[in-house]
Length: 218
Ligand code: DX5
Ligand code: ZN
Image (cartoon, rainbow, N blue to C red; front, side, top):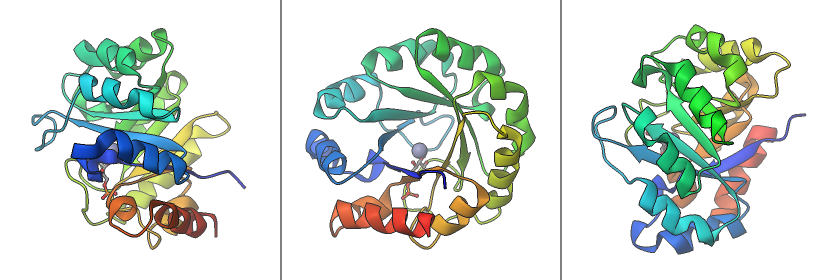
């Protein structure tokens, strides 16, 4: 079976100790570090930009999976690449030239991701699959951690999985992922699971991530 990757979202980390938090999830078994960038325009919340990503870059060697919830994204892609992003994901809903955005990310030697909201049909990603290294299916409406999982998104995940076919594209899910919902998204075809509140909620990061991984692989 396909190995599942766990990507803790630092949106739910303690921002006053961000370097330590990144180190802690790295040592606790995170595969990727998921980094949520919000602009108060594409989504109704604000987080941080390239300087914060650059500041945490020396704290881990893990893949920086940067989820851009910003519109426009194109003027900022180079700054995120220079700050240390490895995967840069743009929303299909965030701009009129998705193909151009993905091409720009790949031209900088980074992995290119395309994200879709729960209300966006899977078919939107089909024309750009050969430009993408990752498809991110949102399982909440983006903007906040700790929201309830939207079950109908599993149909979109399954459709995207079928469209991907044999291509070496990662299928990531983000929002409301817990040990209870992980089996649903894994069965639908997801192979990268983002989790914020379920990892940083307390207890140990190792146990929290191991519980999600075990549930997804069961
Ligand atoms: C939502 C963000 C997510 C968020 C997930 O807008 O894109 O990455 O941090 O948080 P949980 O896992 O708590 O739903
Ligand atoms: Zn995210």
